[in-house]
Image 1 (cartoon, helix red, strand yellow):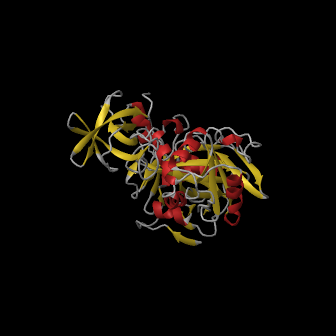
Image 2: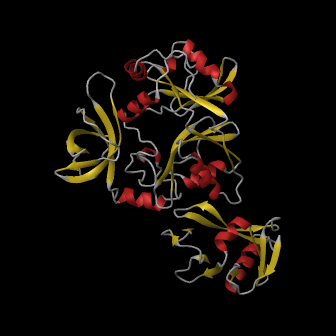
Image 3: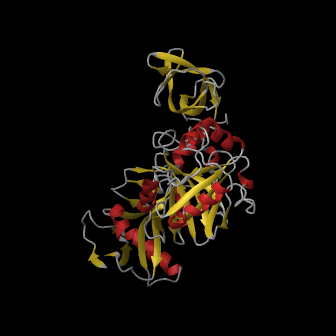
Length: 330
Length: 118
């Protein structure tokens, strides 16, 4: 779902708005699961990495749903709202997440409903997002939520900073999807395309499902350690994750890449150092700055030095790229 | 609710006499001598599934009910899929662990032995 009456902005202007002002993003594809039942929070706490049991009403928290091998099923953001939990999932993983939760539900009072298609979600993102008309009266810190009235429509507002910039998700029933879009567009908040969103995501080192997240990776190498509690006790995959952390056994790390060559590259390209394959490129985009500056994300072996560069394989050539560290050293 | 008297078939759940004695002793101490033993699994633990043992007033409507050594065991149907063939034992002595599930469906168990995967 994308409503836009004012698509007169260029990619560079969209990029500028998102990184220096405020912009409107269509996030309807993000999975939204509603969990009802008194045991829902306890169950999610047993299935994922972060401590959720102390989640206050209105608060949210990211947590990683892991397999019993400690691999990433999806990165979730769980909000405890009035009477139910709202779980944000990756667009591609929502069905898998719902099935996973249902598989592990035995006698518990838990009911999962996928409300992705019956609701609409847009986001206001950027350093000045909080000054946008509907949000100026809603003061939210990261992972807080509120209910707001936008054009007569009761809107669930979640502060998620999904692009590592101030970011507010606005969720309304599907039949009212037009109101917040029109209101914000009339208020002068420009809509930005998915391409620009993807560029900013990569530039800011944010991993997503299907590229940097999935069952090929564990949460430590993906830089998701801030979303793991090492004191909460058992959850599915805990033993593996704890061992990887204690003995520093993660074999790879997520890195950012930056290069200035015009040659085409492909996601999945090998990353090389001294002629040896040391990693893989997982995402890339070109900054809309007028200069040839490409940014990427990828995984490299942990032995690759933290300062320096790697080569990106591209049609028989090797393009030199600088490394930008995404995952802290500790 | 289906009731069966335990026979030595691989598709039921067994309890050893020693384990049954300890359950009865525990029930007496808790003042719940008329209870049934609820056996089940739930999601969680390092390996994905953990065992559940609890005293209940009566079996649930859709429970599978098993009687052995004078004890009534009830298992919800979903848990039964993961527990069929299990023998509930009691291990004591210096290295004893208390109640132990000998579950042929468990492919892996976590280091502490309290959770399993199939």
